[in-house]
Amino acid sequence: MTDTQQDPGGVVTLARDLIRCPSVTPDDGCAINTLATVLERIGFSVTMLPFGEGTAHTPNLFARLGTAQPHICFAGHTDVVPVGDAAQWCHDPFGGEIHDGILFGRGACDMKGGIAAFVAAVRLYLHKVGTPPGSISLLITGDEEGPATNGTVRVLEWMAEHDQIPDFCVVGEPTNPAGMGEMIKIGRRGSLNARIVVPGTQGHVAYPHRADNPVHRLLALLNELTAAPLDGGSDWFEASSLQVTSLDVGNTATNVIPAQAEARLNIRFNDLHTGADLAGWLRTVAARHAPRARVDISISGESFLTEPGGAVEALRASVRAVTGHVPRLDTGGGTSDARFIARYCPVAEFGLVGASMHKTDEHVSLTDLRQLTAIYTGFLEKVMH
Image (tube, rainbow, N blue to C red; front, side):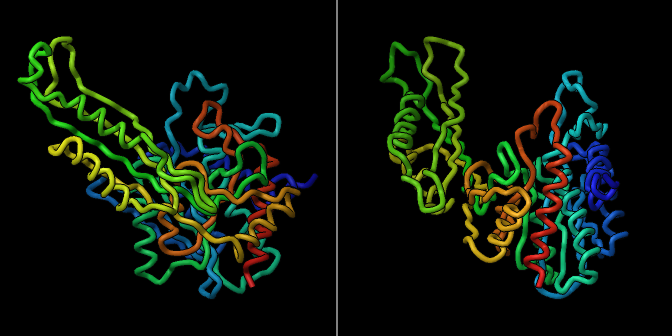
């Protein structure tokens, strides 16, 4: 087998190079610069976009090849989660080691391998067609695994200001649960976090009439919130889910009614709701049971859906051509940076197998890397006309 067949488009080489950059959020470990150098050699115009205050800048990159339409964007992140106890790893987390056809390292599947497949696919596509009839871009952030405040959101704002919004975007998150070709994400649920603080009046448990127990009020409040399902799901989404994640009083005594009780909860909601509507509902219920309650709400993303057809079907057809599987169109799971991109253009997510992401000895098979490269290459061939 030739080197080209072993490493089509240089996908394995670039994946190893990126893994060897210890880019644990918020550190970049030179990952963005490593990628920028490769992209410039291919012919991309690269713009470095560090955002943040003082010296705590988040590295980001936007690169574009060509100026015509259609404009297809690949989006992803170079930052990775911490390795945990490195002694538990059988392979160097940042060594990029290959054993028996498996590439090991933090970020191998989430998602440095996906980024390497982006770049390799562009190389192969350009080798085949020469000058593309449209344009291809990459939106890469170093702030996805962290707070995500100075990453994709800020880059998209810059792109909008500079007329760089694509016609369609593919996010390379590892969408396949167990094998390549299983799933394309065409939407995600929204996510709302709430902190409810109920004040009371502290007192002796033997004299409850002299106190106001905030725990009782909070329990009644939570009981109403969880008594019935939020909905039964919709055409493309499973039912919304409200989960209480914490209930705290901080009371070490058995004979004292506490002065305050606090709960935290998360709602993963489908397209039957908006974050604002759910926030209003939470505050209404809280006021009914505890008029003095403080309700702090943060909405990390609204639900979104990219309707099947067009570029989604082109991606699906490419997956089938390479893997032999017809991928399921899905909207489940957690959130990703696709929730930000959906505000500007249609977006879908497809990447590697995610079974080992964030785990000890994270890894990806070289076969999967080659398949993903072929899928992205085929996708470009289908949509770039």
